[in-house]
Length: 421
Ligand SMILES: Cc1cc2nc3c(=O)[nH]c(=O)nc-3n(C[C@H](O)[C@H](O)[C@H](O)COP(=O)(O)OP(=O)(O)OC[C@H]3O[C@@H](n4cnc5c(N)ncnc54)[C@H](O)[C@@H]3O)c2cc1C
Image 1 (cartoon, rainbow, N blue to C red):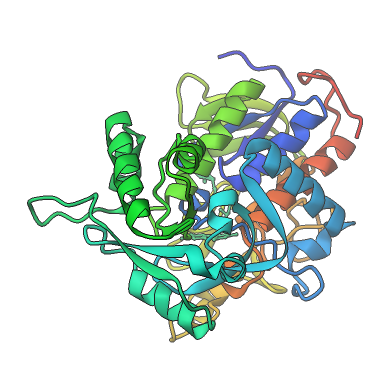
Image 2: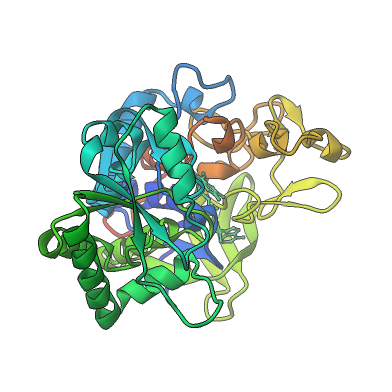
C-alpha cells in the first residue's frame, strides 16, 4: 500500500473518529482511519447525549473548547449528513428503554423519537405497546406501568404472535432485526401488522429496536404506507441494533467519500524530537505509515484505548492518564472503583489530559507530541453514565481536534492540500 509522506491518521473507528474525519473532509483533507475492531459506538443504545455545557465539570472536554455551542452545532450537522434520520430535540426527551424505564436524551432517529413520553402525550388514544411472546427482552408490561406513572392512559397492549415457533428458542435483538432484513419475512410481518391494525385502533406501535439493520428506514416507510401506522422504537439493549446501524452508516459515508479505512492496530511509533514521524501497525502489508498528524480516538475500556494490568495505562503511546489533576502512576487502581456498582465510578472519568488544542499533555502541562491530538472517550473528565453526555461529546471533540489540526499542522502534500478553515 502506498502512502504519501504527510498522512493524517485517525486511530480508531468510532463516533469520535467520525467527528475528526467529517470535519477534515469538509476542508479537503482525506485522512486514513485505522482500527482492529469496533468499540463502544457499536453498543450505544440509540439516543445521542449532548450533556450540559454550563453544568459540565471542570475537566470536561467542553471546558477546553473555544466555543462549545458552535462546535456542537457543527457536529450535529455533520451527524445529520451521515444519518438523515436523526432528529434533534429542543429539550431532552424521555425515551423508553427495552426494560420499560426511561432515559433522557437529545438526538434520536425519527422512529425512536416517537417512543418518548413527550411524543406519546400528544397522541395517547391511538398508541399500542407490542407484546412479543418470543422476545423476552422487551418489557411491555413495564412500559405500560411507566406510562401509567406518567399519567398517560389509554395505551393498548397489542399481542404480536408473528414470532411464534414450535420450540423454546427466544429471539434477541439481533435475530429479529436480521429476520426483518429478509424480504419474505418482512412481507409476512406486514401482513401480520395489517391484521393487528384491523382489530385495534392504533396509529403508533411501540416496538423493540429491531426494524431491520440496513433496511431500517425503508422498512419504516413501507409499514407507514402499507399498514398505516408508525413504529416507535425504544432504546436498545446490548447487542445494539442501533449501534450496528450507526457503524454501517459511518462505513458507507467513508466509502462514498473515498476515505481509506484500514484494518489493523497501531502498536508503536517512530519519533524525532517531539514529533511522531510514523505509526507502526500489526499488518505486514502496511507496517509503517508516515504521518503529519495523528488523532488518538481509541475510546476507553471497550474500545481499548485504556487497558489495565495492576494499573491503568494508555495502550498506544503510554500517555499519562489522569483523574482530575491526579496523575495515575502506580497504586491508584482500587481508588478508581467504589464498592457500589451503581455509584459514579471514577474509572469512567479517567483519561488523557488535553490542552485547548486537544493535544495530550503531561502533569506539567507540556505537550507530549506536537502532532498528536485526542478525541472521544480517551479524554478525561466525562462519564456518559453520569449524564455528562456521550456520543455528542465524543463526536464534537473529534470536530474540535480536527479544527486544531487544520490550524496547527502543515498539511501541504496531503490530499486536498488545504489548510483553510
Ligand atoms: C452499552 C453502552 C451504551 C451506551 N449508550 C449511550 C447512549 O445511549 N447515548 C450516548 O450518547 N452514549 C452512549 N454510550 C457512550 C458512547 O457509546 C461512547 O461515549 C462513544 O461511543 C465513544 O466513542 P469513541 O469513538 O470515543 O470510542 P469507541 O467507539 O470505543 O471507539 C474506539 C475505537 O478505537 C479503536 N482502537 C483501540 N485501540 C486501537 C489501536 N491500538 N489501534 C487502532 N485502533 C484502536 C477501537 O477498535 C475502536 O474502533 C454508551 C456506551 C455503552 C458501552
